[in-house]
Amino acid sequence: MSAPDTNLERQSKNHRPALIGMGLVVVAILAFIMLAPTAPDNDAPDVATPTVATE
Image (cartoon, rainbow, N blue to C red; front, side, top):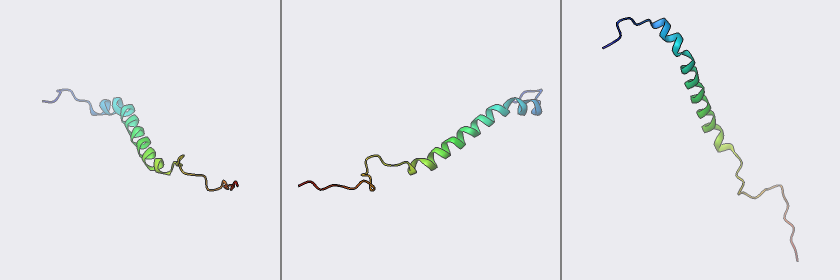
């Protein structure tokens, strides 16, 4: 059953901040997923650092 006095314009106005917030969360999650694999691996040796052989 639906409400007898539904005002769609008022409902869309009242729900707009929540919908914008959910959209921002989705964008943030997608950005994290896309950028996370490009993070540097701290366990890998630095290629620019030369190794010095000791005798």
